[in-house]
Length: 277
Image (cartoon, rainbow, N blue to C red; front, side, top):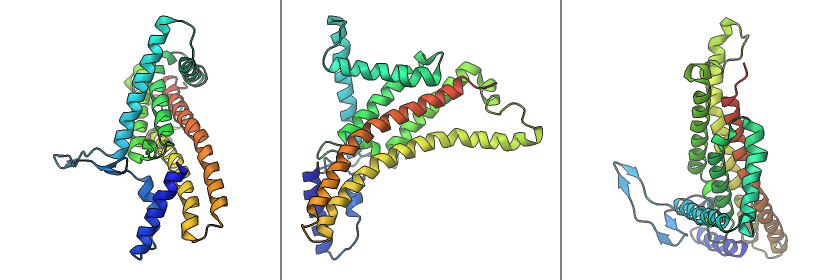
């Protein structure tokens, strides 16, 4: 990834310098979504009812992530038909499934967590796969796109509301949002506050995942870009060493962010299902 990034940054900086531009937007050029698949092949323009439905680079990598999960999890499920003792990749997937069930869903949701486990597992594995794909040289990180993280957060929001309404009833769920013992004159204010709280939770989910997955890539490009901005190779060893450190740190961040998004989604579901009375 670093060698590919170095070449790409050098080309971008050379273009900026040749045009007399001092704009540092070349970093965002490598971070933001593109209508060039893999940065090479232009995607055909698709418009429907005035809406741009062109397949972008991030969409392609989401499809790749979905395809990887479909093939991998089908292979894992078939392996259990042959032997009840997991081996190889099956063992790794089982560890992750048990982790999500026992360390995320069960403690935060409690009774009835089994109904939400399929959604939480899907979210965890999808985010984790997208995060890891973004570390492959020449690829793109779909979870560094705010549209992707917002869509995931909206899904968590819908599952949370559906779980709360199904367990407590429509009226009971929304009545339960207001703490008991609140004076009558405070009820209008508390209703507004709690209603806003419902929407700030998915907003925080979306922004947290987006910001963390974007920040590491920006730092890597900025560190390598110092070599060309300062126009000296004396800074190269330090820049590359720090960029390599951040890259290795990104592996840990990919795991942590998948865990945090899933854990917070599970926590919000648990709060909606088991309201305090």
